[in-house]
Length: 137
Length: 137
Image (tube, rainbow over all chains, first blue to last red; front, top):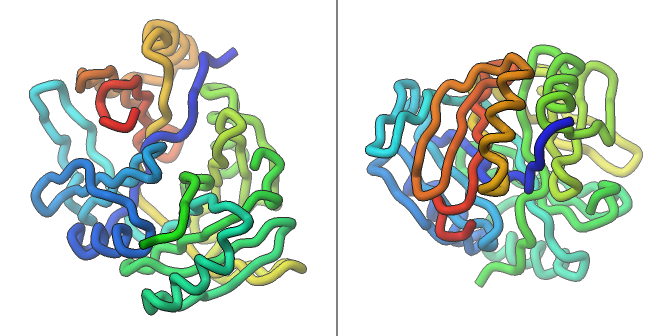
């Protein structure tokens, strides 16, 4: 039997410009930068629960040596998918907010809850989702 | 000001074989499959808090039409990075568990907490991390 996992802590996206992406996630979601490394990385706090890592694409193909040990290489490309949970009562407010931010809604799905799909500056597919779509939320 | 986000709910990885990957995450992490779609998708519960989506690489390049609406296209490649939080007291147990599972530890980092890095079957870079590395955890 596997030892205990508390949950997902870090999720990564690979982007063209970490400053532009950090600005997008700050303005659209309110996530604040809690760590920055040159033009390679911005780490943002997701509601003080998880960390969204924005890596410059191609910037972590070599290991990252730190005084505390070596972080192995990784990288990604494409339009990755990531979903954030929101309260059911926040759907209308979120749709209005996206409109004000000039972020086009690409689709909405009614899966028991409500999903709103849109893109970040690198065409990663973002979703806002209320409870009701998954048995665990 | 941005409306409320509760946290990250869904994180995605793009894999060669959804069954092999689901078996890996079940055996190594204990995550159970809560949704399956052919050879395109397995959704796993991460400790009943988040959903890990394992998509067959190249299998979601077209929109997915459901009775409830259209899920836009997405895809990814590379060795993506994802971290799961664990209790500080579980490090030794986790290292022993990975050894028993024949999962090689690629690196360990002491960042205030403790990080253990290893790979999944598609070379995605996984991390188990205790509190102390990030201000929010």
